[in-house]
Image 1 (cartoon, rainbow, N blue to C red):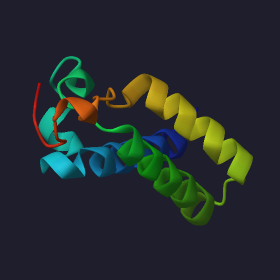
Image 2 (image 1 turned 30 degrees about the horizontal axis):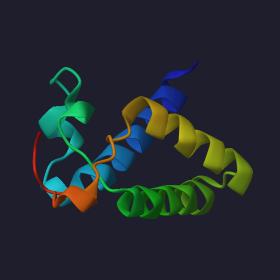
Image 3 (image 1 turned 180 degrees about the vertical axis):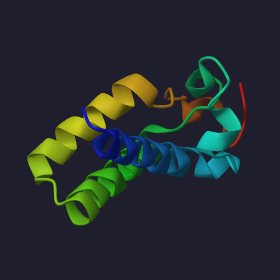
Image 4 (image 1 turned 60 degrees about the vertical axis):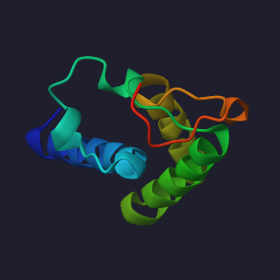
Length: 98
């Protein structure tokens, strides 16, 4: 893989992580040196769905990816970097750090 492609992938990863952490006022730069940082924050199912829709649109519109490929890429992102889901029925709200 060439340097330009790796750099682009890193920028996309950072943009997705930044969007996911926005409710916490955190960025990739804030968490990138913390082990398992993605287990310290959580999201709701509705917020995850909204994030996935936004991420697919971003990949399609900004990177000219097909919708199907974008959906697959976002699913892989969620598996690897996605915030765990929190049951909001228990009265928890997003924005808390576990």
